[in-house]
Length: 410
Image 1 (cartoon, rainbow, N blue to C red):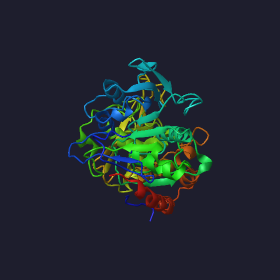
Image 2 (image 1 turned 180 degrees about the vertical axis):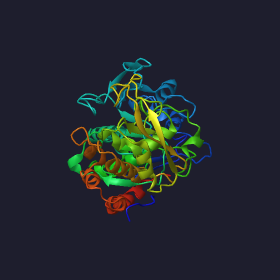
Image 3 (image 1 turned 90 degrees about the vertical axis):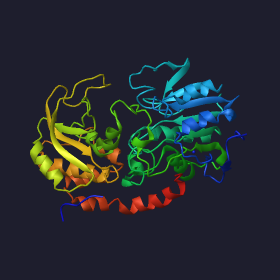
Image 4 (image 1 turned 30 degrees about the vertical axis):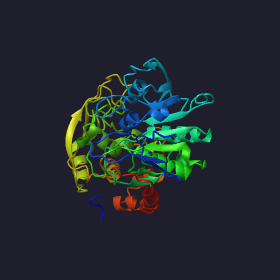
């Protein structure tokens, strides 16, 4: 059938106990009030005093009260020597491109993607606190992987302040990374959609990909009052753009379904008010494309015909079809717990291939790096059935899930 209906010397006053043997978690007594890992760490930061601290963060590293981790730690007398930032800098508007509270900011993007010799030589503890989107191609995962690896290899302590999952916490899907296609947009050895918090992913990477057996080098500061069924919207964390084009919760949830379009000649909505919520091109017949996409019968989402014109709007580079009217589709999630970004992304690519003769891959098959394999491109080009494409990922996803279950914290 062609169509398918898709599917983290402790502060003895506060810390209850340390769970050893590679779990790397510090358990705080349960409490009904939600707190980010950063808030828990700020409240229990005495063990950081008289230590030299480096923080890897951007402007998303805030508590539910809007205070940044760095500000909170400084008020507690913690000595922060350096700040390192991922792609897009400390803030998407580069307001803090040189310093924050008088502390030097060092970029880990561009030619320098991880620590280099001397960066943490005078540092005792590295703290990571960034809101991610639980997808492999969002480059913060690569920053986490590379800096964690460098830190433990140099026998320094690495702490992740855990943060909630914005999308579905139970959703694991997509092709597992083929090492041949490893790049900064695909480095962690997981499926594209791995369904883990940054702390859980850190545990997985430390235990599965790091050779250092000193479990004391890695810890996760767990969130309080959090479980996997909580909707991110109910946590009341002030929204901060996690990157320039992830402008709200809805966008963060649709992004995983539209990111593959970055490797095509189809606009993914950059330069509009709804990046990663609309897609299109001047040459698309929206009505025909909509009919084809709707024929897959997806639940938890609606597609609508739309028009948009990308503008510069301060982006680091010009968006596709700058100042040109694009015909396309708007995607809206009606039930995020039913939303299936991988299956939807495959359906969108197949629909474009079938209905839009001008559709093509760009960037020397950049799609292979995003997907972590050449197979997705080959299957789309051959117009494989969506069920067959999704089934190709099944065995590897199940193998990953078995490993993943050992590292879930909530």
